[in-house]
Each structure stands twice: as structure tokens, then as C-alpha cells.
Length: 269
Image (cartoon, rainbow, N blue to C red):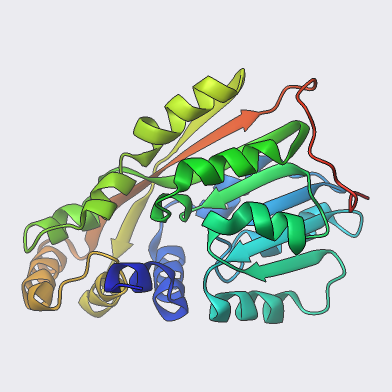
């Protein structure tokens, strides 16, 4: 695993990004996302790239005792944190695996094989085999099941500031166009019913230390650029009282037709 991959999935970096986003975001991302996914009691959900459970845990609450959540992440520590947060739960199954092996995980480890919702947020674009993962998620939808993917979207002010002090990894550049360039053509080709939602968010950070802590946790961090980054943040805080930037997102949801072939689901309630 190279440094970029480590920064993308490491639990400590992930938790730093999540904590600071929640602290300073103008729009509650979790509430925004859940309102659009429309999870109902009794549903079965597949959560790919679940991390420490930012979406998995609300899914568990929403599906209730009659539903089930199957969650996968490549980072063992993140999955362990999710299990600890969830506590004893009869309606949660987890797996530690690369999402590229999702088909085998569903076949061998998860009790449910077909889902009302197959979901991934801030994760799928990290996988080189992303289209194959999309195929697996789509094939394991129930009739009228939803496939929902969320990722970053332009403009992204933190990336634009970091770009002034060093190159941005190609993977990050690609992630910012992942929605319109990769996801939308795929969804239009495979679903009749497709909806796109744009998440608009302004992050306002009053502390240079917090801004730098977030920068250190990103996949585009460059140690040699940190002093220049901090100086730029301090100049803006001195001028405006806060370091402010846009951090937007792209959500696409496709609904499977009722007459689509169904993967077997011996674990369905």
C-alpha cells in the first residue's frame, strides 16, 4: 500500500477528516445524505467502503430489527471501530476486504445476497476496479432496489489552495470529476430511473491549527508545503476572521426495474 492509499483508508486520518468536517461544515452532510437515500424499516443494505460507520450506524437505526446491513471496508481497524460502536447487533454483518473482491465477500461472508440499497460514500473512486464494483453492486439489487454513490465534486477550495504549493495526485484530480465523468454515464446506461443531487457545503475554520490538521489528513498532503499552506490560511483568518472554502459533493441514485433478474437472497427476512 503506497502513501496515497494509506492516507485514503487509515482510520486516524479518516476520523480527523470526519471530525473537522462535522465541526465546521455549513450543511450537515449525514442528514442531507440520509434524507435522499430514503431508507425504510425492514430494508437490507450493502455499505461498501463503510469506514468507521458514518452511514452504517444510521442505516442500522433506520432499518430496525426487521432489516439488515452488510458493511465492508479494507481497513481492519475501521471495521473494528464500527463493530464497537454498533455494540451487540443481530442485524449487522461486517467484512474486512478490498471492495474489488466484493462479489466473493457477498457470496461467502454476507448472509444477505440481494439488497434494497447498495451504497458507497467517499470510497468507490479509490478503487482501480470501480466499474466492476459498480457491476457487482448493481447485480445484487432487489427489484426496485437503489444503487447510490456519493463522491466529491468541484469546486473544492482546500484542493485549490493546496495546488498552489505542490502537485495534486492524479487520483484526487480524477475523484473530483468521478461523478459526472464516470458515474453518470454508467447510471444512464444501466438504469431508467436516475436522480442526481449536488451537495453544496461551505467549511469555515477559525483556527489555522485545525486547517493544517485537516490538510495533514488528506491524500494530497505534502510536508514541504505545510508552512506555505499555514501562512496562506493565517492570512485569510487575519483578513476575514475565518478560513473559508467550498467542499461540495455529487450523489447519484439509480433504481433497478421491477422486472430485472434477482440475485438469490437466502438471508432475506
